[in-house]
Length: 265
Image 1 (cartoon, rainbow, N blue to C red):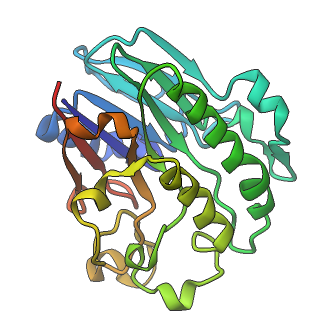
Image 2 (spheres, one colour):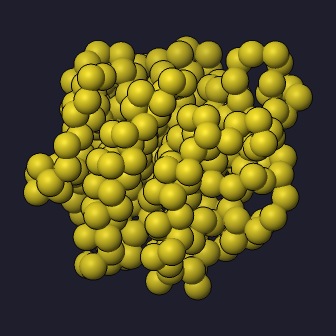
């Protein structure tokens, strides 16, 4: 079974470019998690009868959003955080209410939960770092741990943080900047401390040059001056089934590239 994840930065644009159809034809994912769809179901011309589509769109049009395309119908699908967790944390700031931004879609399957997530960006001036550190990250952690109590969890998506110095081209000059603050990195480290596996680093524990996002400035993608901010994490219970974890920098259409894992069924 192959599971892919891709921040498409606007599904309509990727579809119109032909990049989405090309990607599906080439890789044929069994399950695909999308982030930053910026659309509701039906707004993009997608003809994939072999897939069941689950769309977690934002209330605000053309903003944020997640979706799951699956060749296997899910047992159950939920959107967002459970009300109990959402009310436990203050997930609203001057930018808006993250619970209305379509940032989490969860599909339950027989042997695992799959969660696609689009983590809020802390902003260039760090004006959303407090929400990220004190509310979003702990709320999402609580949610994943709650799911893990009933069956193993796979979560993937744009987590908007580089975990370590090998995960961005210029770590020294970005220390303390958004995407590479101590607070953001600690939020990710908490999952690792709990036993969750960063699947790409499981197979490639060290080394830079493996990136999933590139700025549009200064020809960064062609020069591979990027960041690894898109991840697949799996429950330790699923590690015996993990066969591979890959990054696809040659898959174009977005400023992010797809990532994947393969599991034995």
